[in-house]
Figure 1 (tube, rainbow, N blue to C red):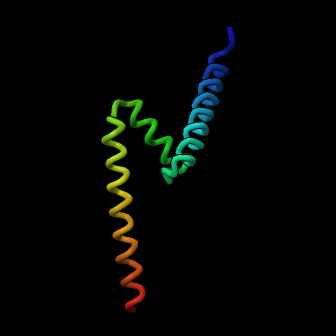
Figure 2: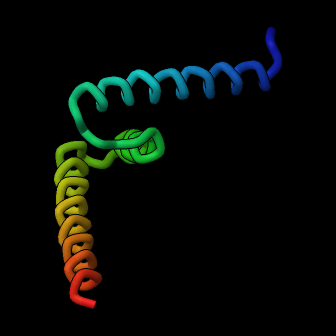
Figure 3: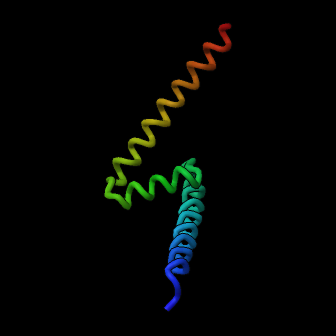
Length: 79
């Protein structure tokens, strides 16, 4: 029987591979999620968060971030 460390390494390698594959899919679909954000989203879904609700929150946060960036740019150009 392999040591417990070997199983943990295998689990981490499998998780890393899954994130890599999902990141490639997200890139193809133009989701604009980096590996870290994608990993957080995956963890949240694994913990029971509704994926559709999570997608809506991500979209909402992006829109709000764009508004803040636009306001900051407008403010900087007025100074």
